Length: 324
Length: 190
Image 1 (cartoon, rainbow over the protein chains, first blue to last red):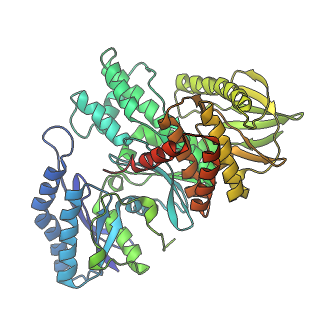
Image 2: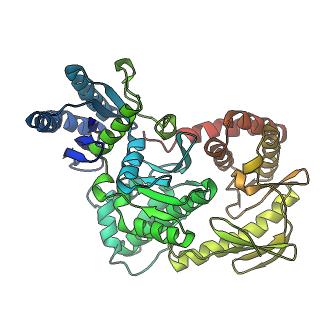
Image 3: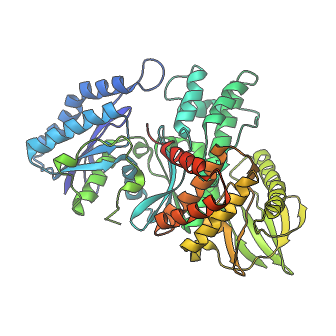
């Protein structure tokens, strides 16, 4: 079986082709804001401009090898409305043109499924951290239940906001990580854990304030150490509460080496196994949509055209994991 | 004798006294680690005693030292394993009492509730604090509801039961429930 996947919920437009065993082809076009953060309309215009080229390159690959596509999967949400509309329109067109089923995929579920596929994790507690989401999840009764999540902004957004205020280019994460490596001192910053939930907006503001008095590298370091300690703490709580013995890190912020290291230490101390997917599957990518589309198609979960409307606020736990 | 190990502490039983020792976590910086452990140990002792004064069953504190809390042993199953609507209603009453006194538990999961001699005891006050704001009370209730959704079947029934108990005790209940809805809608992708 072979499925085409189209991702474009935010900054990255990505199309891919996968079968049961591997990613056959993937092509990306990344929107980089000229200043500030992601502008939803500009991002969707970027996707619309690049759509022909990106989709075309996958279809050329298919034609050259005389392959047959069994389904067109697309990220139905959550995401930025204008971007989702662009992606859904392209996917519907392809599905109609080639008379092949359409599969609407939940973007968050796709991050989890591709992580499991790539790492071999079986039933992990999942920490999903990105520019838009910060959730701690685990599978129970055929749904990825949200054990804890941010009460305001995501960790990625918090870092980006702070970095932007410091005049660092978007996305701020890699730059903050790099600066943190040359730090010498830890500055105490607000540590906000409420049960299994988290809050990052106060931390972002406090770090901005601290940067007026302290060395930027020290602030970056303290920001990371504080925020990641919060994340690891709630992951450990979820692990204990849900009685799992595996942890998997997914989402764009998962590329941060320090976060992975901290989770790994926590898992070692608890006797749990830690799984980290390859970096190219961490950020938003078409392969994760294609892979999830494939397992959905295998279990008969296709999306009829009238149900293919975009879902900007699509929750992870709304999806019944019928393949679990 | 070790009788339990949670995410952050190890629990020993010593001649009928529970000893809760907050373990060092090597994933975080020693400075941050020690300040969190010390702060939470002191806070827990204080808030457990305060909550008891508000009419909420909690263990009696016997001794406090660095990272270590000694208290009365409450024997019984955790609500996580035996939950029913009647219990959830009683939890509503207990949380209502806490909120009426300006106390936020901070970690209202069903792992932190013990059924003992026909009463429900609240434990683990390491994240508790004083706050009379609707926001703090809303988050407290939200944490409990989230546990019901993630861990228990028939979460809606359990939530309704909690609400009727909470309403009975706490006059500001409706305002808090309204805020819980708002909190649930936040922290989402746009």
